[in-house]
Image 1 (spheres, one colour):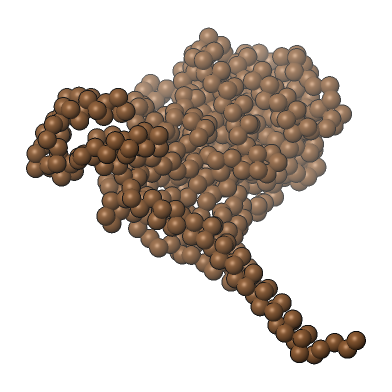
Image 2 (cartoon, helix red, strand yellow):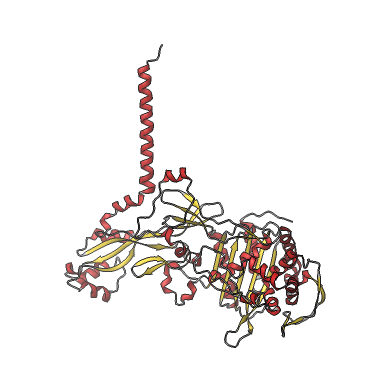
Length: 571
């Protein structure tokens, strides 16, 4: 039986038409549900809109679980504003009696507004839920209306508050005031702009990669914050503050190879859903980025690494420790003032000897020492995507005097931000290079296109073999010196160091003798680190050394990360 050519032609034509219709419907469905979904939802809620009202809108911020799934960190919540029209109300007290079982209202305040006979509009209550709104709507009160409203909502409450920041009013406009909300304002904000909506298909074919530039790039922000890790760090930081009555405690967990920040916590903290109740506004600032401190002995490994890298010392080199050293008419000494005689450089880290760090710095010479510290980014901004980053105070490195170089070698006389410090310390374990710390990972645009915004550029500071050698020395510190080896892990190598710094006395000059800043850092697995952890506490009470305040919290964090990410043993 021969095929009918006309029949075949018609069949093919119908098939092509069916495919085209299907593609058109799918395309329409995509734009209706995803691209223009908000528009259609607003049309459905028009009965709750004021004439000319445009509901406030803002992009979302997402955390990222270890499996890559997203968790909302900052979003929008929708509710209703209760409004009365006093010029239509004849019996204010009766209306209050009817409304008060549905909405908590202060009688005097309500009646004062309801009795403004010529007033056509008074807002009575905000952020009412849908059930309450439905109950009010069903009663059809004369002179009463409900209007839809939106506000910023942080589902995790205090979780990552200093990273997120919050949205507040600046005059009549709402914008980001701290944290990511402020830094990525151009990405998250929607008000007063049509945005720069880019064609979905055109972007794919052109391979557009630019995200942040002179034009607005509206979208949602995906971050590297892992909520379970953040929650654990916040708990430990809060415990330290409570146990030692510290003025401030903070911590950072970062990938030393990429600069991705998994957690960043400060205590005291605040709830961005209720920031108006915070009495001390200084609690809003992110001290991990904005404040500088003399960090103390956690800088000794940087000094030692510089000496090893330049070839002026090795781990087995020795020096004579007299317990003190006089330079430019001023004397520095070890924490206990005691000398150890001739000791190898390993003991400079194991026993935290100030004279040993100073000896390494002097062997390097002022210019070379200063050059290494500048190459490590000390005294400059890291470029982290959080606002108001401080650059640090390292003017003493320029003095040309041996005494300033000596004190800087063990972390006194120069002041750094915690983020600057962890960035430099990461170079010890990651092969010797600087990374850019960052929280933002990608932006998802309204079109559905997601584009990376990570800056993964690296700058080499130390040779790779220097990184291996200093890591070996810091493993020795943990295995045998830190509280006599109490925290040695049998199956995982950890490289770490404590720091106890004197706090400067701005009124009398010099330093307080009874006020300290404690710090601690460590990375693991030591020769191929997945994480670097930094902790610090300002003026902890009743204890002198950081080994007694921060070692145990650090180890609990390390064990949590090893178990949570199932990091295999390395020894």
